[in-house]
Image 1 (cartoon, rainbow, N blue to C red):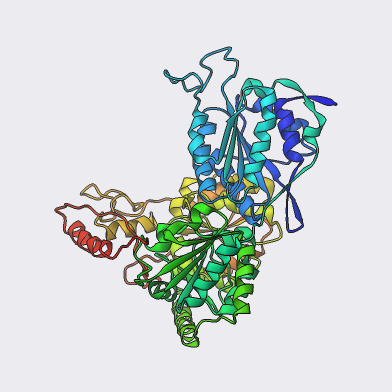
Image 2 (image 1 turned 60 degrees about the vertical axis):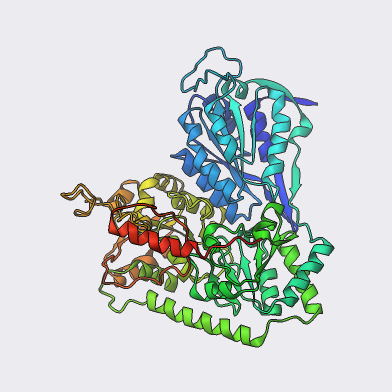
Length: 625
């Protein structure tokens, strides 16, 4: 039996019937579709979404990139078992997807992209917004999405949709290969009818694998752990994706091995767990980084070992340090010239714990006592950063985080991605639940926070969701505030005004760039940007987009406003200008290095001094072989 539908109608019907299952939990694979319509998708997918509105929920977006961010936020909060689709027209709508696609693929988070494409039949050539390439007739702007997609296909004929969608679902549900999946859809093909087999639309469940460890690799891993005197475990985002937090806690408790976390892995253990020693690397805690420098075994679980984690190859300083990498992806399992333990994080940790318990293995008590003391000392430093001596004063950024920290519980979700906030959060934030800390730091994409918070809230409507946004990232992409207002999605925005790119401004100063072009200020007499702050009212801007805004001028104001926003059932923004004077102490400085090359020749004293410091750090870098 067959049913006659357009290609777009068949696509929507198929997506509505796809499910995932892991550990007995069954979820719809595509929970909804986001869209902005133009001539490349309005008569095809647009009509299909109206035709089948009963089976496919729809969300109206304001920017194509931000729609992808919302889908990614939803996917991460759903532990990659469910995601959203995003449809755009051809031309700028399609190319606006590229940044979001890169973010999804780098972070191993699934999202389905459905950009319109030029006519397959080429009745007119070129059409509006078509890119013409003299050397190739089959190239469109959608080809920009190839390198940032885990799977790409262009559906030139109706019957080609069947294998394309099956491959798309395979990749979206594969814990190793998942990321952005792009199906480019020529606008004439979208509207073309075809007789589809009924079984194409039958409900289909995609099992998400949990592979266990190879026995020989497991035996070698046990031997390595038992022979180590100063082991350190680094929890990456793979712990979160696998829902391996309980298995990690059991491993840490059984062995006494301390656990540090990457930005994606923070929260894998709650901050008050005895073995949690905080963030690792350039933005890490002094406790974790000191342990990393002295570790003779680094156990990486679900981590990619980015430069922030490894301090650009300078952090793991012990001459005999070895790496044991538990990862579901062989590509990551072999990093740092490590010994791979290729398995799902939860399965692998459970097997490793069982084997070590059988041997009665535990780290020496003196080692455990040392990191416990370091953890207690760091918590005192956090308290000092969070505490404001004068409630009537303007808060520092750390005190803003302290006010929020004092208010939230384990149900709150905090979303951030870029600027100076990720560094402060990684060092200072006290994660109370496994999914409270939502940092996108694989791509560190400015503009992610607000749309991602919408996605998180759609996945967890019962939870308070906070988008922590600096003024720089707010100006990149505030438009989805309109979506939150339109749909009644009660996100909370904490908007921090510090008049520029604080993170890059500080980095610029440290590498001899003198903060050039990083402050939001008028030009001075020398042509630089060191004049008065710009008269920009971001609170008024948020209000003009329909959001309720609470202004906080002091620490006391901030505490009141945050509590009011948390209790609100409508989208609410708390706006605060932070104290940035040099006389005010901030959070502890970076505890490890990050390689940003400095000019090798320069006449300005700041750059010459920065290069001397750079050469000193570079000399400590090593390759682990």
